[in-house]
Length: 312
Image (cartoon, rainbow, N blue to C red; front, side, top):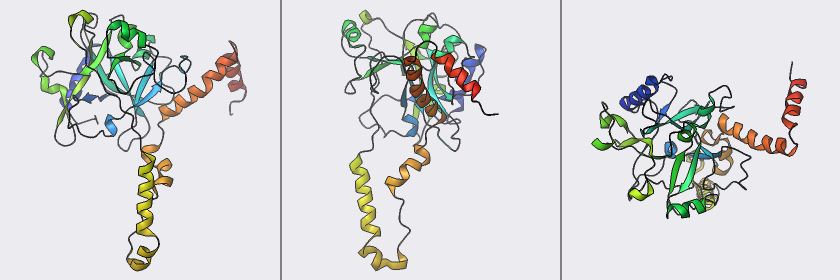
């Protein structure tokens, strides 16, 4: 959610960061709502791009697989286009080892993420796995490594709790009920005002329930955002009908300014421009396979080439 939509929810996240000595800024609230029959259409802030966390993970092509390490990025919203956001799951201020929910927020990311100077465990804050939500545990383990079936819901499992040895967690929409509230925090303070006057809840990473308990973890539906080619063609045909031939001859100088050509303008539009983090990911995916193919000394040779050919 854009900064300023809910000062109380942002203050709650900042308080969690401050209590554990972390800098209480440089984040955005991540919200969600249970899927309903008449759910609103997905906007830009609800659209995420999936990046491969390790280009050398051994999975073929660009299809996401169950258990594969991935990152979720979002294009910047507003006038500041310098960096995008990464979905991040970070430990709470206290009680992470005893089952307290991890906090989920958006962290800015730019060219060169993650910072190699950061603490080793923090590199996993923005890394997740998509796990199957259907069938018993044995069947779910059997599906690991298979392509994700978009017809079925998935569990969004963060990797950071494993890095901190706190056990598995899964992402869910935070509850406003008393049993899901945090001591000293009003449940309504964990909501964010969104377009249309409605409210969405903060997202958190709760402890994974035991399979024998009968409690089902919250699942997510993934839908690819695709602009069908026939829609682009229909838009172009409508523009040609209204602004060429007889209609233009009849209106003459009274004809309004023709709309922008959709096909030629999409690659240059602001919304279609790649973020600096996306450019970094493309660079890694192109470079690392070549370094791996050249053997163990490839990286040393690459550094030497950069040092010799660096601009003065």
